[in-house]
Length: 460
Image (cartoon, rainbow, N blue to C red; front, side, top):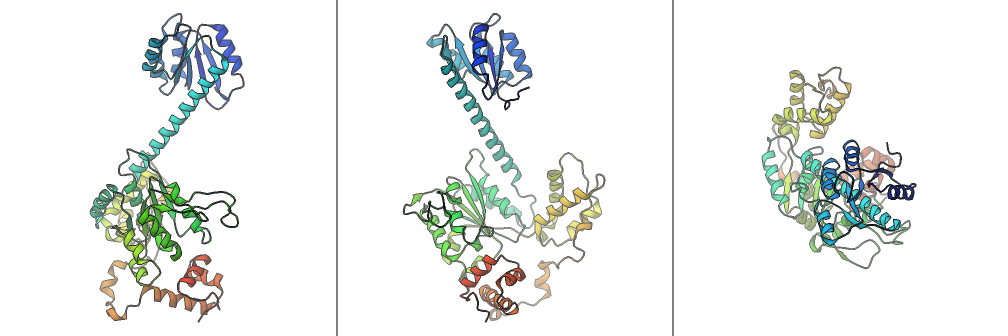
């Protein structure tokens, strides 16, 4: 019905000259204006349409505005009612506001005064809708971000999530890729969902090498080439809430000291700024590498490692909690295709349970999502999408290979350095081909060359 953006102003007034004047005044406004002349017609209109703002006269031929106010709000709960009356009084104004009115105006009035009141009412209605959407989003996040299952140490994980949610100490989440570290981070943040602090998600491995400091900490205008305006970083965006730093091991060494300073002092300085500002950010970090070994190998600051791991939560791989695969599978079927009544045949479920899941829960979800797309009928057949020769179950490696002697174990950093040296030799120092062969970004390779003190052109 409304061709001007969906917003509606409803006038309920028996003064037809007043209605005509208001209709003409708001003819080109960004909302539709409707007028009716009795309380009954106003209620009937509200029963079948949505009124955002209502101009309600106190004296109507068939009703009193004060009594009509509550009836209108029963029909249009979000409506903002502006009372208008030719017989103003303080007591009457107080009673109107108690009955749910948003504003109170006296006749006669200037149309510009009415315009200000109407615009203010529309603005309030819009802000309330945004707030409701935010609350709905938080509620959905708090419901969706939960760990499914209870085996393989998951009970302990859920207990640690509850403990972590009760304070703002840093948390370090460890586990293989795809185990659900981001789900744990959000579960901690949304555990108490009676308020709405911000949750900012930052994948450190995906941040551009030359912009990572600016992305995290922000920058001042003119602080470097291309900094055309002041920009807040992710830390400031998360002020008062939580910053989730995924793949924390990818942060360069020179920025780790700055991160440590924020954790210790709660003070942030933007790139190019001489002014420090206080921030209150709860840090949750995650990694799929052994940060303790990285600290021993001098590729990660030891003091930052201990500061981040005030509380540590380790997520077990899916192969260590096969009992949860059935529950997880049905959970994903309902989440991906709700109300479709999909089934998972017994032999398909057995194949899922027997598979080693190198990609963990993320791989399980992806397989089920593809199987749902490719299905014919209600039955889902994910087994045909599993790798024909899945990688061996790493949980059995300890029984297959004798453990090496303790003095034969090299630091992880040394192994990485040797591997990069071999790749540089194999590709004659061509960084693009080396990065492609190692499966990393060229910027990441250059950073690792710097960490291991390998000259950019040195393949020795």
